[in-house]
Length: 214
Image (cartoon, rainbow, N blue to C red):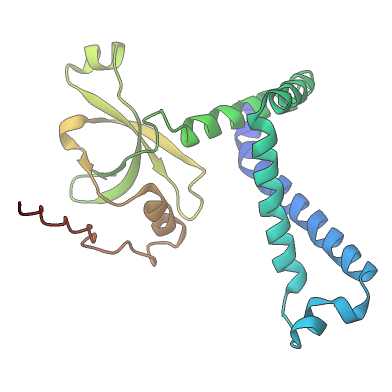
């Protein structure tokens, strides 16, 4: 039981800690690089104005470039071999192995372009009739669950606020599920902001051009 809670907690904090560590390293690297540049060539001197939080801005740009370059390397054969070696190394560490593999499976499920998980925002009545909450469809339950319930059910993930990385799943009769038009990003913004950031409604749809008259 303790081990399960430990892994669940680390899955929440580990990605955040790694992100903050990388960001801190990039900020320090930017500061060191700026010290090597002559003052006359600093961005403030070239632009003639002081830029607040310049190191933070440059660190964010550097982080974006690092992520993109990493993706480019991982997409080719050589990069995939390096990733495989890295995963093999992590797989030999007892405590790190289940955390990394679990986080990777979750990321692959969420960001997979071919899967149906986290592609639909749903509205369901929870925790009782008359109260509604946002949820994400994570799958269509089949097999034993539908056999024992005697009806078609949908697996949904209900995120917590303001941390949508934690939550729980429930199986809801498909007939009681309302599919919304808002995107997953819009729903996440609403959840993280405690409902203060609401998606625009109605959604502006592009107008169809009239057919050419022959």
